[in-house]
Length: 459
Image 1 (cartoon, rainbow, N blue to C red):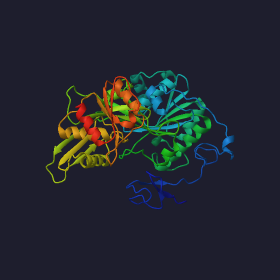
Image 2 (cartoon, rainbow, N blue to C red):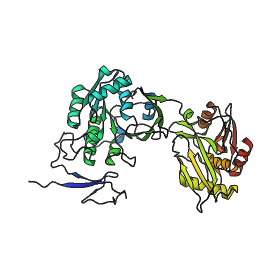
Image 3 (cartoon, one colour):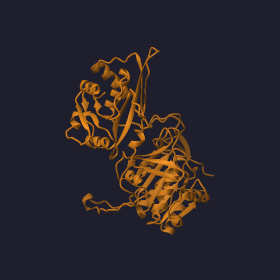
Image 4 (cartoon, rainbow, N blue to C red):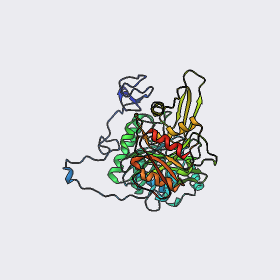
């Protein structure tokens, strides 16, 4: 009897090892190495596990200038905001991965989408977790369109799925979820790194060869990373994460990878009994403030993909009762917070060494860019002086260590969005104030001293 071969693979980076160990020496992650069984035999040529590239069959060597380009027209997912995040629609033959926490609404969103797509394309919903009766009940509750045109099957075998896709001539397929899929030539359990990798590779090869679009639903682990090997992210054409805001009322769909569009897009949905409802004006969500003006609050604008997003920054300064004052930020980088406090002390003469400082980005938004630096700094200064910033004032700009205020990308679009939301004044870097915008007074500043003077003027 042949001895069973086993391998140990890191689920984060995909590195393999001859034996199990606590820490991956390649990516330094702890407790990510899992055991799986090496396939006994190689897959036959032409089978789903054949050793070909992810893009399909091998091609002959050509000059890049001689390669024939194909202009594949996108088709709509049926959800306008989803299309925008995808880059303008779905590209035929693409493989997209949607991941998120349990209960975030992944299956709900794609079930709504497949209902719209089924009107123009042959669609198949493959479930590896729920029964077809559960899917039917959800479709009725969501009032999914064209349910008479949607094919559904409960299946976990990749070979059988591809056979059904060929038999039904399906053009749009949803796999729920990729962690439940298995290939026959691999003896590992479903959900193991090797099974997830081989299943995704087989589906991708088929998609590129036959022009079928696959939308895969994926799980995440306790660290909010995609469950399975790191190769899964490299194999797919797009990775999209669905998460909840802090109050659980809204869902945020963000792009992490997109070969056919921008990789920094995001959109918002409201979860209702009838499914996901598009939020086309997300700025209104994060600016729902009380009529009473409070010290330590400033509004700024972030650039999310291809559009501006207005958010509120809150800060609180309080006398510390400990030897080491606390510096806590939620949604804003703690290192940039420390930098802003140091700049305010060194160049603004505001000593905060004996105070606890807390900064919060309202609505659970995580700030990934530097344009919010000036808003954070002025909100801290507002709390320190107990002097509110009027609610009609917008603030944005990057702070340098020498107290200069640097411009933000797409400054005019940010100011225009603020004018639409009722803002009448804006404290912005001088380089972003090259043109006037009707309905809003632009206060241009070059350094911290000018920004503090502008604060005194507007408040």
